[in-house]
Length: 157
Image (cartoon, rainbow, N blue to C red):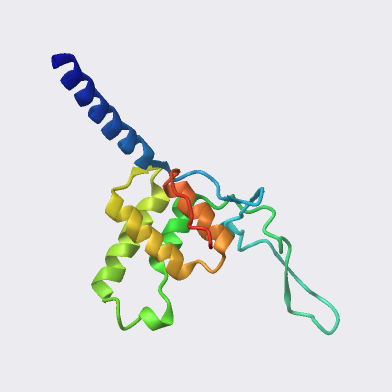
């Protein structure tokens, strides 16, 4: 009986450690969707422009990197920060300024940290924000799997 109790307690401790490990997330991981690494347009060089000197478009600026080829990869932390800093127009009256401010502060922390351990409550909040803000189902799936590797979407019946 004593061996059984020790074995059960070791199993519980191992399960708790495994749950903690699942919540340790690398925020520096680049987001990859359909085999393509997403680019972070916030890292676009604002000086990478050329001024048109002649012709009917004289004075206009041309972006020398329109496809963001020189941009850094979009990291999980940067994308989570964007979801926490964004609200839909219909949410404007429903979400207080204090809540938006706390989300923004947390978003900056996620953007600047290398790793984070998320509580189940934090994972639920991030999933809610991802669903509210991100328009692409493929990107929603990639983000949810990045913050919770055990996540499996419900498939339509």
